[in-house]
Amino acid sequence: MFPNEEKYGLKSQMCRAAVSVPSNIAEGCSRGSDKDFVRFLEIALGSLFELETQLLLVQELNYSNQESVKLLLSII
Image (cartoon, rainbow, N blue to C red; front, side):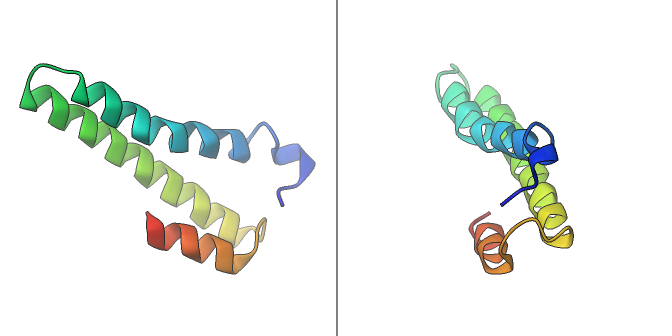
């Protein structure tokens, strides 16, 4: 559980990054060329790297159960 002061900080950034991944994949699918699709996949990958970094911060700051963080990192 995150501290209250993180409600609109790290937690919010993590939610935005997590939503960005499938959103960019979906947007890329709607594009007319493979080049555009690949560009959106690269953006989604960048969001995954952001989320990974944020999870590492959560782990370092002991904001969550370490096993939960490890599981999420393995999924990424």
